[in-house]
Amino acid sequence: MARENVTLSSPGGLRLEDALTGQPAGALEPAGRLVASADGAVLRLTGDLSGAVSGVPSVRVYPARADQAVYLDGRPYRGSAEVRLAGDGRVSAINELPLEDYLLGVVPLEIGPREIRELAAVEAQSVAARTYAVAHLGGHSEAGFDLFGSVEDQVYGGLAAERHESTLAVRRTAGKILVFEGRPIRAYYHSTCGGHTAAIEEVLDRDPAPYLQSVPDQRPDGSDYCSASPRYQWSVVWSRGEFDQVSRAGLAAHFGTPASDFGAVESLDIVGRTASSRVRDVAFRGAGLEFVLSRLDIRRVLAHDGRILNSTDFSVVDRPDGLVEVRGRGYGHGAGMCQWGAIGRARAGQGFEQILATYYPGAVLVNVYEGDDV
Image (tube, rainbow, N blue to C red; front, side, top):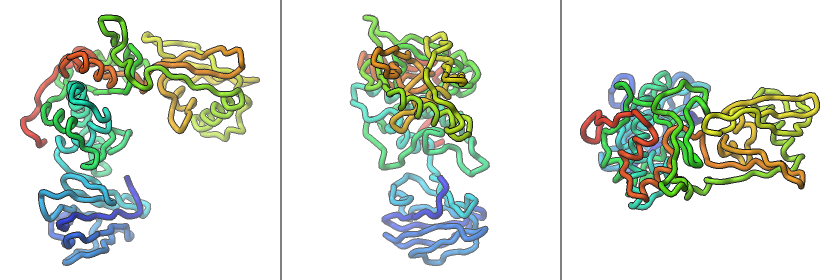
């Protein structure tokens, strides 16, 4: 993420090199701090530096001791960092590290803290996250990096996020990814499917894929594997006034116009469902007003409590008290692996291979490299 400046440090000190030439660019004493900011077309480096080179647009920063982390704005990260100009008087700090080490800071944030009896789910998450990363290498090459460390790609928290069970899962599945017809798959995943995953084209504006089809997620007794999820079932209730306010604010953001341009929104009507019974289209209606939205746009417009609507697997309840209620199941887009379903399957004794085969039918598990580096 670009910012006005970034602070770097390491307990044992840092060494710097010019990112363009690879030549030494200075050193930071142990326990010292380096602040990097933009100064026109070059970086300004200030702090407890010795032998610093000025007038460079980017530097690579390495811990002076290989067994220590580099700290970016006070947070520890494995590997090294590149600091470069990002335009508009800002700089970017890019963490550079082996893929397997990157996953140590991704998996625990994507699937949450888990018990050892749920290890198979964490292993499945490790493979899905690794597959996503491999498929998106070079995805932001014009900006000098592969992946955002946020929901734009995968959430990444560095060393501070690492946990024992996720580290074990990453190491046990090292090098394993899912492929289809020889290429890494689009390894979509989500929190909670509500009992049935969705084909990718049902919920996102993406091309269909054989391994991203809708699959049932029931136990032999008919209950859903993801039923332990805190968002397995949910409801949102608005007064008529609140519903109008939320809808007009969401429509204004969607169309890029002021909310005052819209008349009162009086009703929400489902006008189409997908094959997995999710809402495909809804109509926002009022006096002289009708807007039909689809897929992810529905969830964005019906935002509540600072986040988008949990899922598109919902019904609009006709309440005698006049309140507007949306009652639903699941959390997330619904395509690919259901994380809470994977947890339920792990608790039932399924291995990560079976879990992945269920949620990505037709994809093949392969080992693309040996060891911990790529």
